[in-house]
View 1 (cartoon, one colour):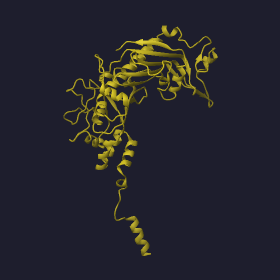
View 2 (tube, rainbow, N blue to C red):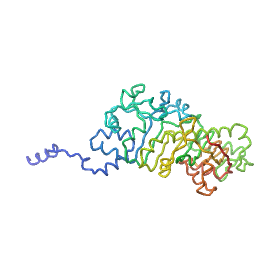
View 3 (cartoon, helix red, strand yellow):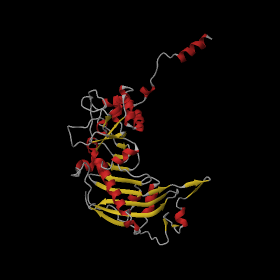
View 4 (cartoon, rainbow, N blue to C red):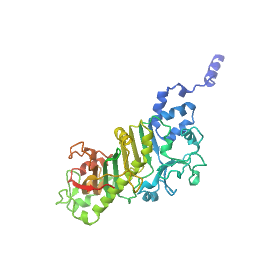
Amino acid sequence: MSYLGEDLSIRIYPQSEIDHFDLLPDAILLLVFNKIGDVKALGRCCVVSRRFHALVPQVDNVIVKVDCVISDDGSTSSNSSSDKTRGTFWNLFRLVFGGIVKPLQALGQLLGPKRTTLVSGSSSASPSSSLAIGTSEEDGETDQGGVTHHSPTQVLKNFNEIRLLRIELPSGELGIEDGVLLKWRADFGSTLDNCVILGASSVIHPKTENGVAFNASADALCSGGVNNNNGVVVGGDDNGSIPDSFYTNGGLKLRVVWTISSLIAASARHYLLQPIISEHKTLDNLVLTDADGQGVLHMDRDQLEELRVKPLSASLASKRTLVPALNMRLWYAPHLELPDGVVLKGATLVAIRPSEQSPKKEPSDVSWVSTAFEEPYRTAARMLVKRRTYCLEMNSF
């Protein structure tokens, strides 16, 4: 009996405690940190131990979620719907993220040898800077409510092994009305390589009645329209052409506004990425997106290297990359019915490439267009490119 009691005491009160994390090799811990990715969570990991603090800068997959936007006049905007209308001209904005108090003070230690507090500043010393940071309460400004901020550029300063970087803005730059669909994806090197824009004047989701889903385009079918093999609800005389009303009721003008606004947003994002691209030579893939899923700017390794070798041409009027002269192809469908029953009214797809760019593929190849978006919008793009193509041109701006 005494022997059993002695055995239990050994189990309950071990003489020494083992930290199992200490038994894990650095390579395993780095795998875990890369799965975490989020820069705020990595900052919290820094306070756990000196070992973690030393390993975090070696992470090669980093995600930066921007919490708010600070304009040149010092005003802030975040994720609210009222703020979305203020973002058309992104060249006026600086990206910062914050909402971090004590848990991320350790991340400030990554930014330099001196002790820092995460504070935002409007960088009066560098009027041309698009991203600003304060490293102490004396040289930075604290946002209202005591919330402090840091720019993505400064937060990433001491990460020296980044290969995959994803930056997510709190919302899209383009203020659009409820129910309107507008998405874009742009690839850049030192200038625009290509851009694809998908828009619709309204999106109608299938309704359910007595547990049975019926298509919202039923009215179109009952009024004489037919659902063709491409899923497009068309009238009896529709041959895939754009109707005359498209030019007279403001439809074309609206699509031009969508196109120019999307290109301005993309070129402004590209301009803001210069410091990050210049500092992080190990980057293989860079994505700048937003929480709304409105726009995606993408750069692969070759495009990143091109920007380092060949400086971008900046617009004289604003802080954004100059958009070159463009060739555009446009596809349009008055009603586009997707396989899941969603109907896009006034569905429009625009594929854009620089006029002087030598096509790497045959002009008839639109695979890069139809794969630009995730589902269900990838299916919408594939359906639209089967319709009649219209060609347009646009001057540099």
